[in-house]
Length: 368
Image (cartoon, rainbow, N blue to C red; front, top):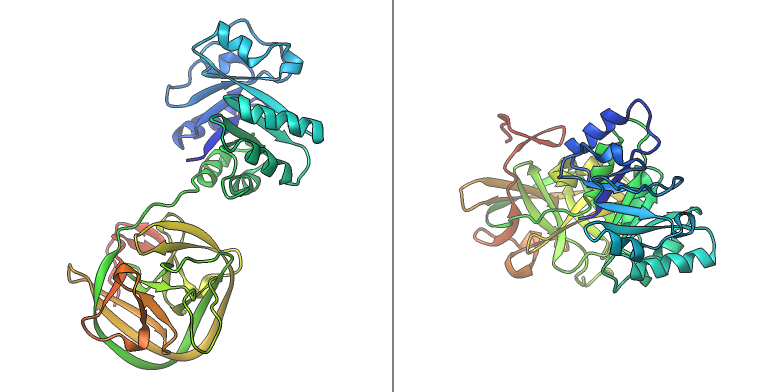
């Protein structure tokens, strides 16, 4: 899990409200330049003292981490650690040129905490620091100007920074930062569904979901006509006799179909667009979030597949009626949709909650 630090040093009258919001949303750390601002915080949050433009106080109060600028404070983290063995110390580095970039790399390799501020908008220097710290046991915290930049920082070199520090502009920013920090997606419990019947149902619109990611051979997206039952549609990573592989694509289903996105929210295939997020799922139920690059909606013949879960629940999926459109079965078996027969097994997922505008909700909802 990535770390979220909220910088309250420049907040005025909204400080108390922002702190309460941060605690409610379980922000990982509160950053202050006065130890008094950390005094009443609960033990569930990391208390970071960062007196950037002030002298170091004699007493660090309840701070659990103290970040210093050695050039400004005239002391090193090693010297402070000897005097205060129960406090963790970190170093602040502002990167503006090649020399300060090398300084940041050295800090990343040696310090327990490195707080980095990159003045230029390019993320190349951050990539270099992350690479330099590959074998380090310390943590990199990068200053983000807003939530959008925080999301970018977490994706740099696929690994991203260990955390971000952001100064909120208004109440609500703490919640948005925490949401951006939650980059991991939960594993899903897939089930084996037994095909009951298939039917050719005529023309309709189907959606191909083209992502900005190469899918693995055992990976695709979950698609279904109903929010409580979906089937794992495989990507076009497997060879086809009449066309090249397109490992970024899932020929996903009719436009009314549901698929999963962040926090198990459902989206209709028809409402996906460039920049949307969908949940990629493999045969073990492992997931990751991928970005949609394009959705192709075209009229095609359609086939309806009805399947049944071990608990008797019915699942439906409507696909393009063509041999090259495929789903995944147990063990990663690639199954051509037009060759499915009663008794065949496919992999699926049974969300437990109904949906309202895509969000999970515990209410009565009958889907047919």
